[in-house]
Length: 140
Image 1 (cartoon, rainbow, N blue to C red):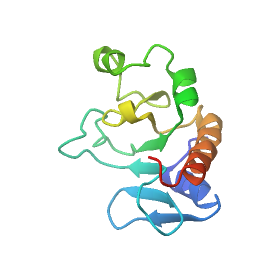
Image 2 (cartoon, helix red, strand yellow):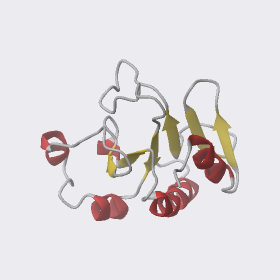
Image 3 (cartoon, rainbow, N blue to C red):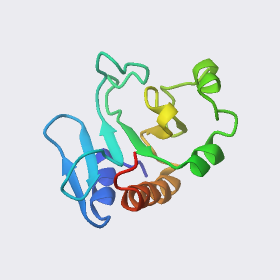
């Protein structure tokens, strides 16, 4: 079973007090109505500052979400410094695997293109991202 963009959006909107900005092709998920900083995004196309994932491929979307220091370290134990992230040879086009966000990895954002096998883990991490935002509303 392949997890679609619609499935991903549906899951995110089941979390408490989530608002969605969907005025563009991309989706931004916020805790509450204030919409200062999203806890998750779904990106559907490349733009001038973010092309490494080649999102122009048909049917491809990238789910991105915030993590805390411990979660990021668990997912990427060898990428704990800015230098390690910069020097790493990462495949930002790989499907169904976690990788540091191509632009915001230094801020401990995680990405996955077309999650399928990793979807249950994504759901756990998305709940945690939502809680991080809830616990630290003014501390991003």
